[in-house]
Image 1 (tube, rainbow, N blue to C red):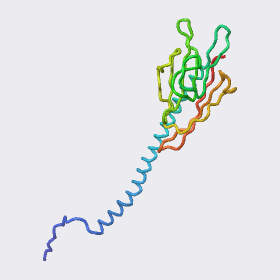
Image 2 (cartoon, rainbow, N blue to C red; image 1 turned 180 degrees about the horizontal axis):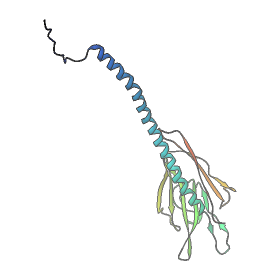
Image 3 (tube, rainbow, N blue to C red; image 1 turned 135 degrees about the vertical axis):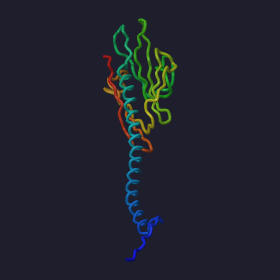
Image 4 (cartoon, rainbow, N blue to C red; image 1 turned 60 degrees about the horizontal axis):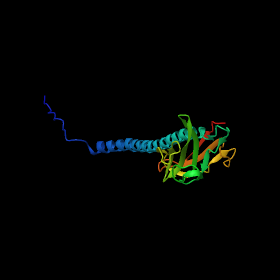
Length: 199
């Protein structure tokens, strides 16, 4: 009885057919996976940019509502609520009107009582480049005690709206519409609004 010798198994590698099958399978898996990853990264950038714009809208809205609530300067002898708002005003001092900040969209004036005497606080909203800034001067000072960016990437600012009218020195409500945008997010329009608390 003759014995056939078994050859030892070769570790030479893959055949060309096995290699081609592996490359095709890898391509089938990689192309959709890479498209999904690119889509996720693209959406993440857009979402992040939109969240940034939304956050600015919330911050600006909170400041504007609080400032509008304090609008009005009261003469406590005769009791009327006097002038509390100025529009499109440049920096100036003296009897001409409120100071504080550069040429502004709106300046909001309010009483500030300390130690039994009244003085006037002035808050200015103005655009600096692409930022909406809020400058505050306390108790009649002409130098801002704070100058804060409340919204970034400002594209357009609408006309200030007042009720009953902006010709009234102390309107009941103020509204300001802004459009902001970034390269990663579409235009986002929001309205800042506030209501005067003093009657």
